[in-house]
Each structure stands twice: as C-alpha cells, then as structure tokens.
Length: 141
Image 1: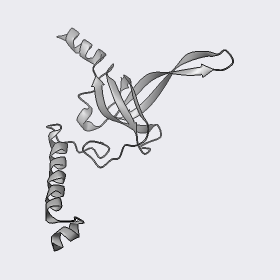
Image 2 (image 1 turned 60 degrees about the horizontal axis):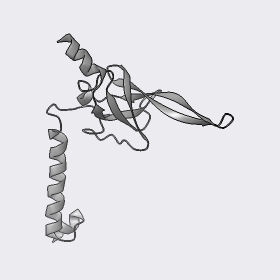
Image 3 (image 1 turned 30 degrees about the vertical axis):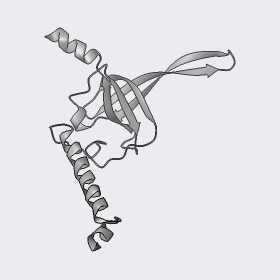
C-alpha cells in the first residue's frame, strides 16, 4: 500500500492501470513512425506543447525546417455590405519526422505554439491530404 500512496493512487489495481497506460502511450509515440525523431520542436515525439489556435491550409513553400501555408478567409465589409476574400500566409516549424511526408500543395494542419523565431509561431501537427507534390512525382515516373 505504501507504493500505491507514493504514486498518488487509491489502490494497487489503479496504480497498475496507470503504469500500463503510461507504457502504452510511450510505445505509441515511438511506433508512430519507424524512424526516431530527435527534434525538440516536434509536438508528437518531443516535449513541445502546441496549444491555442489551429489552422488548415495548402503548403505554398517548403524550407529545410519550416513550411509556409496559405488559406482563404472571408471578411465582411460594412460599407458595401459584402464579403471579400482574403488570403493569409503563416510560417510553421516542420518537424524532422514530417519532412519527407509534406510536399508542395499538400493540405496540412498547423497549431499555435510559443514563438520559435521572429516569424515562426506555429508547428505542423499532421498532414491531411496530398496535393501537387504527389502529382509531380507521378509525372516524373
């Protein structure tokens, strides 16, 4: 019972379940991608927290450690009582484990994080669907 109270559990059974859940979560993180991700700015494998706003958009530029996405939004103009379309570009950190997965034209999701640099305040969390990158690969084959 002393062991259970040290871990903050009510009894030994709940402690065993807690320990099993922690082990399973650790295995899921390592097995998600076969390659090991040593990037400290990775929200999946690292201890980097992504919180706040999230956006989905198309990759228009890709750099070694970041991607630029663009998405459209509608803005209401009161003078004309009409809606106008505006485009927004955001820079996001591209983790090492996703560099080969994300290509130009892909539709990805980014999430807000602490400021990493002057222009990077977001991190790529997942790839939603492919785009021009897959089409260019098919044309080359």
